[in-house]
Length: 176
Image (cartoon, rainbow, N blue to C red; front, top):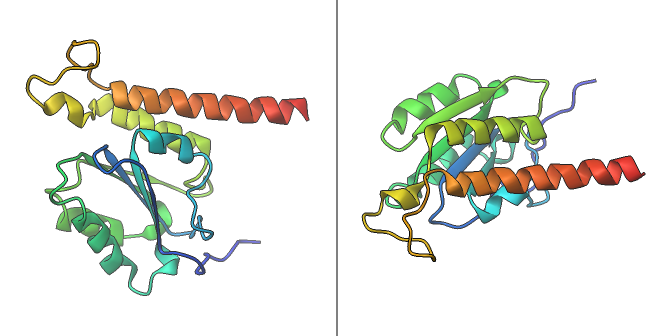
């Protein structure tokens, strides 16, 4: 039996530092109705902004996503779009409208939900492949030890946090 999209709860769930790279998730299933990101995404919010747009919870979902994306117009951070394939043709139109703002996009087909650890890992792989790290764009910027920051270190930290989180979950399940 197929589950109906969830319409209750907030239409946008957000977490993470405002100056970090952004991942905008377009969720046609409406996960996160209690105001929290799915647990698999939470470890990333120390390093990335994650905005989870619950499409069935919004009266005008594409207008609301346009407003969410407009939040990033002046932030000068990379924006990566993640969408469930069930979001349909609206995703392509959204990308065209915001082509100057969206750096990259990924679409995932059912039956894998967007909160699945494999989806999160695949998003991180894509971001790491692009070397998305706004902190390396600043001329003369230095880390705490005085050396230039390494490209991709922010996302590498996010990937490590996710691996630790998933590893702890598997250990708890194994221990019963």
